[in-house]
Image 1 (cartoon, rainbow, N blue to C red):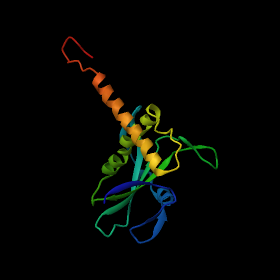
Image 2: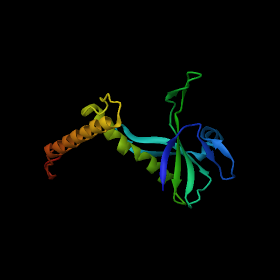
Image 3: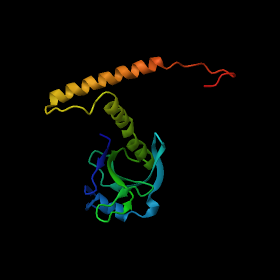
Image 4: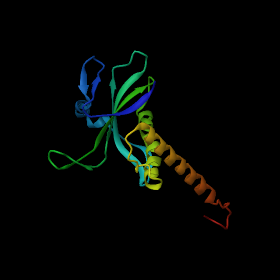
Length: 173
């Protein structure tokens, strides 16, 4: 099965030569030229640009390739816990892909998470998705289901209220 999962910086990954290393160690070994600036998705403030690099890992037994995808912010935006200085945020992703996948394909796959995350952020603010104080799975499931139904209702009502005006040479939206 193909996947792309976020991984912690201390994740131990298998290398091509059968050794293992932590993700942060592999990041430290990558030369600057190994990174490419790419947008993974469009955000509310424009394209989400990051510097991206990959390290090929040991292949799996099923014929899939494994990669460590590294995402680095383009500007310092996170405080270092030890020094207090601003540093670039680094994120790691474990990838299990078809042979021959490109960096562009991995970056596109990594950007797909925002299509899922953004509606959840809206639902937290609009229909109270984060307002549950439950301790059991069943009650959490019921609360989440009601919130998602309420969100679907709001989306349908909003889409019906938006009137589309035809474009004519004299009239511009």
